[in-house]
Length: 376
Ligand code: SAM
Ligand code: SF4
Image 1: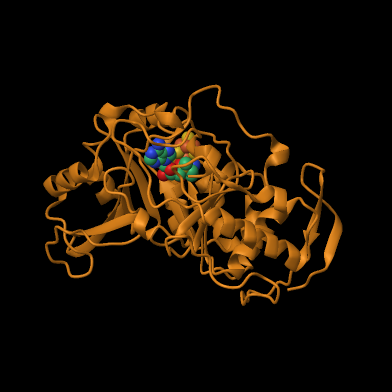
Image 2 (image 1 turned 30 degrees about the horizontal axis):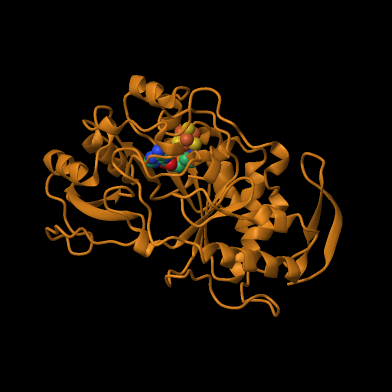
């Protein structure tokens, strides 16, 4: 990796930045001088995956995620530039982080998203994915695919237009469904369809959402409601545990089976955030993911960190504390020195990664920050 500098660059908002000029090679063999060894936290969990928030802004106001009015958003000057994002990904790549998901807020409202995806896709990551509400997907799916994006997660909590308008406050289901079609046509396969399952809202649609996804070669995933922002947007009566979700799915779709064997399996195996189960549908075994952050946490297998839009590296979604990578990125360092400092800072943040979180079904235990301030 070159250690030379480019000092005359400007952020899109006109602010100068110090850019490390980095090799375009996709190699991620640690450079001499870069703190060696993978990113491992104090509990021996190896970090391979970073979720990067591109913005804390959104064109929706989902009831469980953002208040309708009045959320305090980050000053634009604090938001990381594309150069800073790329430098961060390159640094994390040096210590074995090979999977990146772009998120937000709503990442598709970030100006020149396609350019950023092109830049990151040239880094040779194993996985480059994007989470979106789908509102702008119809126009963006093909450009995203051409820019080198590998995969998509699209949030769809309901297939009923009036419910969709109610939960998103500003969204159009018609547009999102057209966006999903555009994604398929553009060549995105196995898109994940994410649905926050809520009692009294969409608990009568979980089977229909799965069938909708399977009919289009997508993978449905049901997410437990989490009490972010000190539970301000959490209505305990709407919490639907994965245990209850399984009962609903069984009643609507038939027995839940092991993904590996197709046998009946009450242990529901899996690692990572989604535990997958299979259902026999249309003569095939089809998968559905259950993400149970609250009632059946998966912290012991957590392999991820989150970078907020303003460059705060969060070891865990459930806590407010973070390491300020923006300060390192704007310290004037470049090349290997910058990579070293970023890696050191990330390691420091990880030493504080908790064993687990304390989200509770009554709406307590989450961070003070909103999901969009950390990165969802
Ligand atoms: N705007 C994009 C979207 O909606 O997919 C990406 C960011 S969003 C914060 C990422 C995911 O977090 C979405 O699937 C959303 O439904 C989920 N989410 C937001 N707030 C949540 C909460 N309080 N509990 C559970 N999931 C939540
Ligand atoms: Fe926006 Fe996604 Fe949050 Fe909904 S869940 S308000 S789409 S960031």
